Length: 101
Image 1 (cartoon, helix red, strand yellow):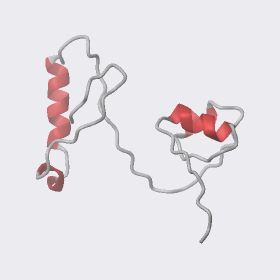
Image 2 (cartoon, rainbow, N blue to C red):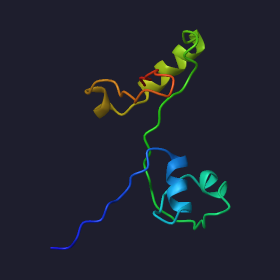
Image 3 (cartoon, rainbow, N blue to C red):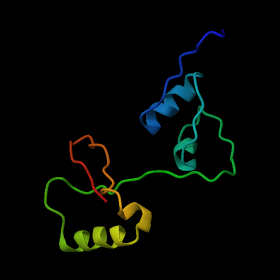
Image 4 (cartoon, rainbow, N blue to C red):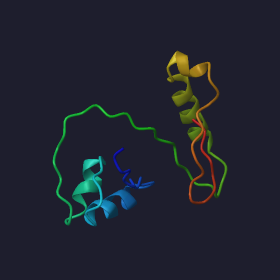
């Protein structure tokens, strides 16, 4: 049986780029992130990539009416298959706030 190799998985774009710069990994990241690191070679690739994103807003105050309307608009545009499931939940941010879209 072949020996298993440890494979670090980056939990942030900064960590991914640090692993790449250290020579212990590769990463598929937004082009702007990659180009911000002069110590990393960047090659354009043509692939369709889906990325889960969340809506970030200030935890210091409740969402404004405009923001609430924007969230409602986003929820109304979700695919019908997604509506049967519970709302998408995103991990807590650094300030501990969890976003729901």
